Length: 581
Image (tube, rainbow, N blue to C red):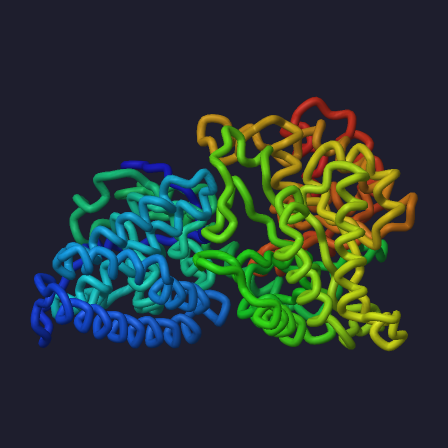
């Protein structure tokens, strides 16, 4: 037996033969126009773009059927990239200089991909793979060749092994024949990983080189809960994996039966379960998984990969779409969170040594009121006349990177300025749907000042990802220290408990929207501390509901005290190990 370790990106367990995938190309009917120059090159490029556009639309339709609308939006992003003025201008500039078409496209794609790959943000780095996927399609269209039917040899249920898979490869997988995916390269935020999760396919990426040398049909075992790949597993491993597969099937049936029930503890404490979303098209999948609202809507999707900011009306349409798709459920919109860690073409920021600590989010937007006010007005206009089932305003606006009372009050002034523009004269009908005002707590200073800040907001949401990073002084994108970023570290629990208690004392609604909100090991702490809402990626909602419904706060009260006095995160896990569902 040979064992490899990779990064688990989609949970599950599988046993089966290996299917080794190698990207290939097939002859096409068209001429190779890679050597064209001048007018012929421009015409050929326009035709290639149209050809790829048609293919992307077809892939989008397939992704919607196979994975869902949320995941199909990946191809919306590819369509936007295809029309990206930067790409069009770069190709055009090279053609003007006399370069042949094939070379012009190659260099323009690589320049754009290289720029993304050099960014600090791992999410943006993963977008380089999407750009290269798009570039491959453009090159094939120009050369008059077609992608071979990539999985035509996959005729029995197998574990697909590849160097990496592009989003277009992934969506082309014949789902019925795929037991799991293992790739040599790739990352957890790649669109391939997102698609695999949506399709419910166990997947491990970054398992290291050499997998393509495996003989076709060789027996493999995949434990995508732990990120472990077994080649020629022994009998004991096979039995363990088989039992895990039976357990998973049982758990899925149990969770499906809970879908219509509330997330309520044994002793009647109710927690709202909400979804973290990044695009309006994800709302349907969230509702299907039982989301009672959106605890974090990232608005960045409208601003990325474009040379000019979106217009106010364009933003209104997008935000209204989210509200409509969520029905009468509440939606918390986070204002634009970009800057040194996520630069935008129209919002250039000088390079910073520590962009996560630098000029980003409200720090940047307070200096760019024209962009800030347009977004706030758009969010407010989208929410006018819209209410939750409880009659509260459906739209809530949350400000990230608030560190001080001065920050909060600056955001409040911006909020009030925008509201006066949207509802001049204090129209009573509009006033009823005035969005709630909240802050995201992700800086320790804000958590420590919560007894003061909570009195000046309608709601608070704890962003555990950055709060963990800043509290423990750990860059979670640095693989050498990322494992230290543990949201159950007792220091962090004490800080969050203090903030949550301050909110409860002030009568202020408090939720959690970081990754820890959907972590079964952390949920007992948040329930014991008394949060109102846990927000997470939609796929984690069924397991979170089962977790909440297994808890008893009378029992958790004693465990909470012990956890706050614990010395390590491992001790905390043992204290809250109240029986995994």
